[in-house]
Image 1: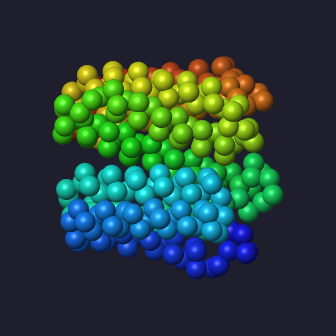
Image 2: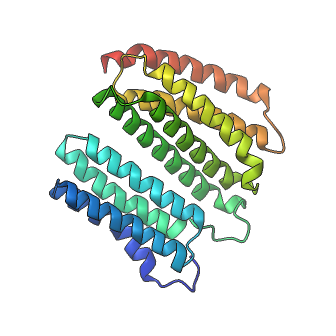
Amino acid sequence: MNPKRPAWIRIASTMSAPTVLFLVTVFPNPYVFGVSLTLWFGFFLLLQFKYHVPRHQTALNFMTVLSFLTLLLLVETVWLRWFFVIISTIVFFFIAYWSEPRLEHAIHIKEKPLRRMMMMLYVFNVYAFFVGLFALYLYFPRFPFAFLSIAGGAYAGVGAFMIWSLYFKFTADKLFIWTLIVALCVVELMWVMKLLPFGYLALGFLLVWLWYMIQLFARFHLSPKGILWKKQIGFLITNGILFVLVLYFIRWI
């Protein structure tokens, strides 16, 4: 983190998550939820504009906030809710202390483990968003699914863009076309997924699996070496077989 920023920023960023999730869990009131969420988002905006926290870190904070709140609202088991409260502390600790590159060149090999952890966090965030959209559709079937699919595609495109930005130093306009392609693919896939007789957790898992594969091969394509198909054939076949098996067995879960 920039030495000009006060040290309390990291501590406050870490503790903000469990504090808000604790309040939402203990006081299941719409007013408490609304005020807590507003203050939480306002806090991260303050860090962005006043203390110049990197944009990718602010985006990661917002996406992760939304993810934990979504899962917390959907989970009925009490111990799972407290589990999310505890895990959120660890996750936001990582974001506050290690999500900002420590080296001048963020693509340096020494940043690879941190970059991979950030990538996994983005995957988790996209999964949680998909789960929330499918839950909204299943609980409110009259809600326009076209709106949900567009929202899912846009969010998936942003998630893919944020992952690619960890690996490449491209400007937003150079990645726009591929971001749009990923978004359109997810929109189409959501219309297919809604026809499957599964719950929102399973639908979100299947969709994020396909999204991850799409953005992964798009990233390979954008790399200097391109897609090495000889090395990826086995990977594709394995994932195809596993995906079919999951489709078959998931109906009993």
